[in-house]
Length: 211
Image (cartoon, rainbow, N blue to C red; front, side, top):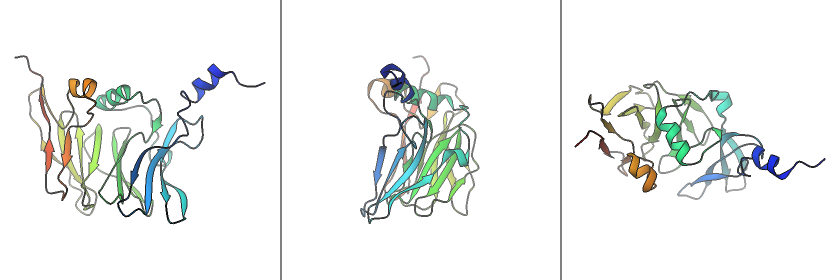
């Protein structure tokens, strides 16, 4: 008996599972990164690469091998997924360096980086509750990320020391995250941007204290 349309719609999350999304094209045209689950009813999203020189598709990062997504997400990530109507699990967002050779992403509040060429992945020692990690454009191994109300920096190379870049003890102040109005009404989901040469960052400071 054929599966009913309402049931199929529910199992495929409105026919969104299994479709490629969030592409990142390497500037030299050698490959494209994208997110996709293995098939049309699989809710776990993985990171894939398509080699444009005829190499075909290859799996770059499998979240189930790195860390099971148990749903212990930071509150900022939960809000981002709600605004984006994101219902999948696994790697639901990522960021790359300029040449698309390194990808950074959060799984269960932990920070991971993956070498796109080799598929080698590593978890970095960071503060808990990682949100919106972004590697430096120069591919030098630095990754900026948000943890709670603080913007932090960690090295993905030999120097892995994690440190705070911007933060304040005031409970109403946050650094590196988009404020409510920007996220809900303006479609801006991020709160910091790297300089093209990775020499610095522009960071949003949000003060929600009563006036």
